[in-house]
Amino acid sequence: MRDRKPGTGFAPAAADPRCPGGGRCGNLRATAALADHQALGRATRAAHAAAFCTADGTIVALREDVGRHNAFDKLVGTLARAGHDPAGGFVVLTARCSYELVQKAVIAGVPLLVTVSAASTLAAERASAHGLRLVSLARDDSFLENGTI
Image 1 (cartoon, rainbow, N blue to C red):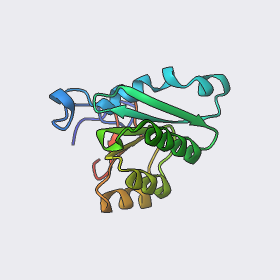
Image 2 (image 1 turned 90 degrees about the vertical axis):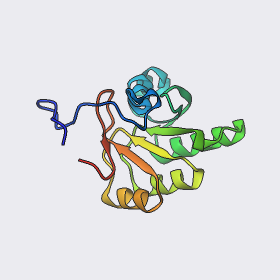
Image 3 (image 1 turned 180 degrees about the horizontal axis):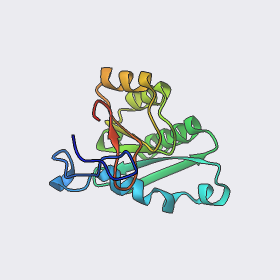
Image 4 (image 1 turned 60 degrees about the vertical axis):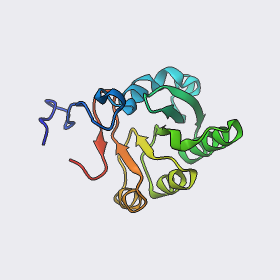
């Protein structure tokens, strides 16, 4: 187990062989950049965001809504209309991760779902059963991956 950052309970981000170039994961870069793309969230402090990102963490599309499910649905629709293949990137949600969001990600063909809040036990089980890589409690310097400590 990696050492914890003092006072946070999070393990510091380390080089990950699954990341492009073996360096900081795209999900860390995307999480760090997310707030800059949330116009509605900045204005209201009451909106969820769903972002589609390339493997290196570049945010390609972002949709916001007061409902976390609505934000994700809007993003999936945007990707479909634009002809983007969800398998070519990942999704970041500013929400807790429920099993319903995992199901939507699996149906959409998203290989990695990143959420800034915790995943429910059922969400983690569903993600594992369907081969969806699930990251929760994502910050710009740390995260918790489904099935890890």
